[in-house]
Length: 394
Length: 91
Image 1 (cartoon, rainbow over the protein chains, first blue to last red):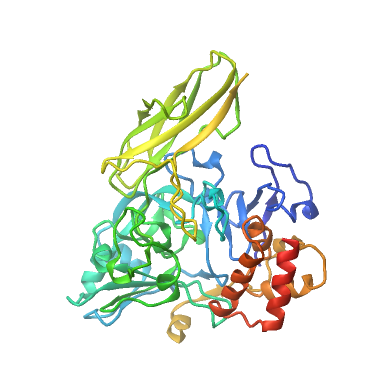
Image 2: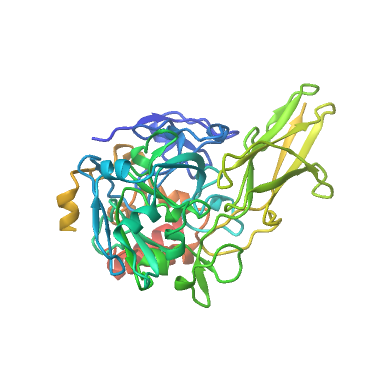
């Protein structure tokens, strides 16, 4: 039986709630509820079932987001606890020469073991900050995390089975499923070149530990640089197919207006109006302070956070204190890989009392820079505008 | 599916409501029970207050139709109308 430790607390400036009754309308009165799933520390609960929980700002300050603080995102509510000893991964499909069935031990012993640092970010991270508003899970900043993923290359597994030249897409299914038979199962596909990319992994470790249940145990797909919708959890089936996969989660969901955003194209799934979301866009987040926080006059203070993109890597992060008229470079930390987020820091002048209106923007090695304006899209994807926050020096 | 059941030893979490979600109370009004009965088959009711700032009546209508037409919720046209009326009025 699943039980949860309930910790009810306000986010910065939100109501402190006490008692079960008062928390019932948490989302309505603006207060965030912090609730711990089994094996997780308290996270911001967006929905109980399917479970959607985001990581609070305070848990996003480490280079690698802790496994028990990593965000949780499901579409469908039937989520099995997979027994890793009985678990098998099937490699199959019309474009596979020799179907395989692999155990976790097969993956651990039969293939080269690799590790890669990469940010895992929900396509809808920041949806709750959209204007105009967009329906769906109202994430703020924490539907993302950075981790060191350990596993094997999808490419090595596919090549062991043998991929025919006609393969167009790799189709991925996990053990989680729908409640009603009529609901479309969560099945995703990738272009064949992304499936065969050396960085696309079948991961069974996260930060040196087995994947947490809520993050896809015993194995999940890791598609560095692409949004987390492709990072299928509890992976049980990998198919190579010569045709475009036509399931709901490709044909209707996770789509953006064609030609409105930068990023890799997914040609076999594109039409004149819409195309699948693919790469993570250039973005940054201040994690040292929340908007509205106070600073003590004369006490040294430093702004810090992360910048990331879809894998070109971060070249500069700049801050502005004059509404974006002038920008100064922040100090950059090392990035363990170009798919990881990269730290930045900038000293704050606390010598004068009053508000500090701060803007932060990141630029990638590919020249892409965070925009000032959101590109509206019905599902509220790609929230990556320049962050602004006000800190009060008193 | 059969193969999946054979190869996986799974302990399915109860599809019934999780303990904590029973604390969610929708505004009491005619048809609030209908909303609870129909919507909570597939998801917890926190989706309602979560999307209250986003959806107007037309938004709720679209959302309810999506649940029926895309996700296969077995909800009659009459019940759908009452659900949209409730959501549009109270959220």
